[in-house]
Amino acid sequence: MRGAVAIVPIAIVVALSGCAAPAGTSVAGGYYDYGDSLMLKNMTVDAGRYTIGYSFEARLDSPVVNGRMGCQLIDSSGGLSEVQGTASEVQADGMWAKVEFFGRYSIADATLGIRCTPAVPGRYALSVRALDLYATPIDDLR
Image 1 (tube, rainbow, N blue to C red):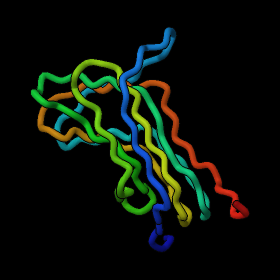
Image 2 (image 1 turned 90 degrees about the vertical axis):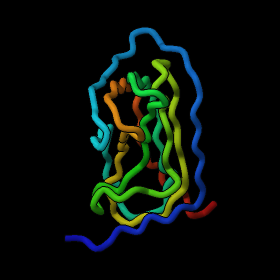
Image 3 (image 1 turned 45 degrees about the vertical axis):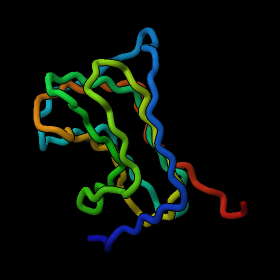
Image 4 (image 1 turned 180 degrees about the horizontal axis):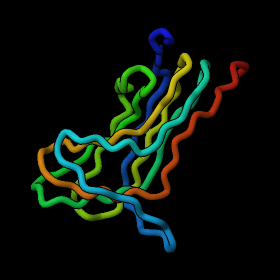
């Protein structure tokens, strides 16, 4: 068993914007009740300094008034703890939206992931496409 994972933010940017649906894009989705979590993707990163980010297109459908789902970066190697400042919200309006986040971090060995969870009780259908989770090493000479 490894020790605690240290994830220290250096800089953070979160963006959410409307987008058109590109032709030929595959869609994955499912139904989730309040309290359920959906893991979108995981990756293992060695200790170091990185620009870590995620991006995807999402469409959330729900009969819930003001329904929304929060998505964020988590450290799944450390007991699914949230990485502070990495949250994005997807509104349940049936429209495709581009969800993006990136930040600079100094981290120990970790398995990072993207987790989405409904923010309001109810049933949801989340469709996701063009999913990317990345960690680009930061050159220490800069």
